[in-house]
Structure formats: structure tokens, C-alpha cells
Length: 141
Figure 1: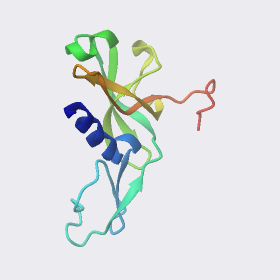
Figure 2 (figure 1 turned 180 degrees about the horizontal axis):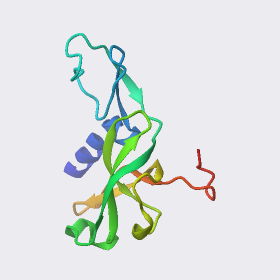
Figure 3 (figure 1 turned 30 degrees about the horizontal axis):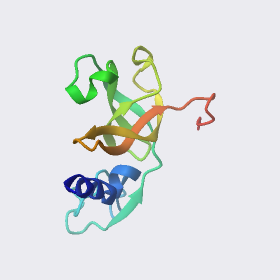
């Protein structure tokens, strides 16, 4: 039963699944994850929920060659700072590309993937990762 509770909590966190954050209507700044107050405008800011497009470019990255037990089957893998087209940055795994072919400035798009399993019941946690935009898949901008 405890595992079901954990799964329900993850399903309620829409920002993790959909890359939802805020846009401050006062200063035109975007934030992820969502915030209760604009860090720039403070009380004068008017924050609105915002659905990010999920398109951006790799700002910096690292190839992980030694990983915690939960991720050992995935090594080597890439963790990157992705700068979304709206200007905010977030950290995500880069998938569907050879780690040696990843480069700064590479255009990427968000995709929904399994993050990990835990517990004896194998509760699966999903979230966003990023993959290169490519002509082959039809996801080029």
C-alpha cells in the first residue's frame, strides 16, 4: 500500500511530467520548477502557470561513466543542462544518442521516459528526458 501512495504522489506533480513552470507577466521571465513568488519582481510580480514547449539546446553536459546502483545498466549516459527556448535551464538526461556525439549547442526536445523503479513492487517513476531533434524522426523544428 505504501508503494501505491508513492506512485500517487508522483502522478500529482504535473510539473515533472509536463515541464510546467511559471511566467512572470511583470518582467517576462520564465521559471522552472514553478515558484510561489517571482525572484526578480518579488511581490510586484504576477506569476502565471506556463507550459514549456520542451525545445532547447544543450548548455553544458557530462558523460556519466560510474553511476549509482539504480542507473548502472544505463552507463555511459549523458546528464546535461538544457537551456529551453524560453530561457530557463534545467538538468536532464540526454537519450537516443551516442554519448560521444553529444555537443554543446545541440538542439533537443523533451520526451517522456521511465526514470527508475523502486521497492519490492517495482513502482515505476516517469518523467522528462531530452533527445536530439532529428530529420529522421520528424521532430526537427
